[in-house]
Image 1 (cartoon, rainbow, N blue to C red):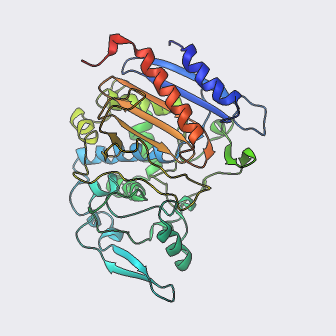
Image 2 (image 1 turned 180 degrees about the vertical axis):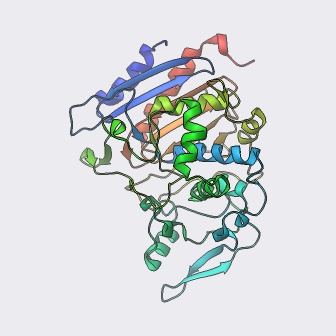
Image 3 (image 1 turned 135 degrees about the vertical axis):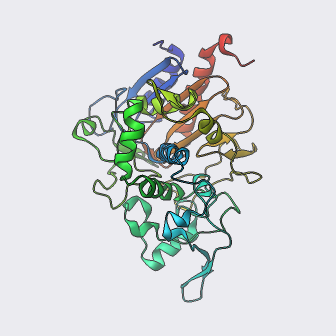
Amino acid sequence: MSQSPDIDQVLRRAVDSGDIPGVVATAATGSDVIYEGAFGKRDLSKPQPMTTDSVFWIASMTKAVTSAAAMQLVEQGKLSLDGPIGKVLPDLAQPQVLEGFAADGTPQLRPAKGTMTLRQLMTHTAGFCYEIWNGQMGIYQEKTGTPGVTTCKNAALKTPIMADPGTRWEYGTNIDFVGKAVEAASGQKLDAYLRDHMFAPLGMTDTAFRISAAMRERLVGMHARTPDGLVPIPFELEQEPEFHMGGGGLYGTARDYLAFTRMILNKGRANGHQVLKPETVALMSQNSIGDLEVTKMTTAAPPLSNDVDLYPGMPKKWGLSFLINTATTPEGRSAGSLAWAGLANTYYWIDPVRDVAGVILMQLLPFADAKCLQTFAGFERGVYDGLGSGQRAA
């Protein structure tokens, strides 16, 4: 594996300046790992250094994995992208749209128009939202005593939608329902299905919903950026959940997640296994929201997330289930690349045109932190600089 002094310098500087507590980053082509590095500490309150096998809460990076699992079941005819998802998940057969609140605070609901589908769930066009970026849902949860999704309680999924299915893109709890659909169609719990059909074939031995004893020894602590600087904070997802959060429940390593991105780069193939058909990967990698566009996510919970507006001014689309940039980015990412992130500032991208993918993991809140994004951009730029003219797209 080739190292890169330039990337090392970018990452070390971010840590040494106190911008971030610690970071692991790795990148690969379809055939080779081209960079791997770890800098800083796992936890600012403890002496252990960050290592390349450190374990992070990867949060919404879980979404692409859950969606890939669902696509295996679509291939087998056990799930349908465009049939009514209510046939698989009866709770979604007659969704209600939140219109607002009466004078006494009672939620005003109406039946949704149209039928909800698996494709809409995978593309965040089914109508579900997160209270982090939708204050109305925060009010609804408060008025009705509905828990937040990170409690991993089934009651957290009993929410109305914010728009009729298929009418707008809004980031939300959709992929938790995709996870439920995987369970319904496969007859396995989501953790067992992912272990057998995704993690085992990909060699992802350090990725799971439950933090094993071996993973815990390498677990990275959570941090918050405060006016007084970076502060360690307690954080751990429920280890005995009522449901496995297909939208954000996984813990894992950069190395493991890179294996998943390389499977996508290699058209569904990894370690001699055809995990997904090439045509399935092609379908997942194309715009699946038509004329709709990915919109800015305005925070309603500043301690958890800043406003999220990646590549402002550039039209952005959504695949199954990836963000798709429609123009080349300043760092060198090709148009039509795939990407997403996790709430605690974990990020990845997959560029099929240049045959390269990268993963960078940090562990601090709020999301879309300027210093973390700057570190990510420096890493990504370094990866593209290192590719050289030999791999430049034709």
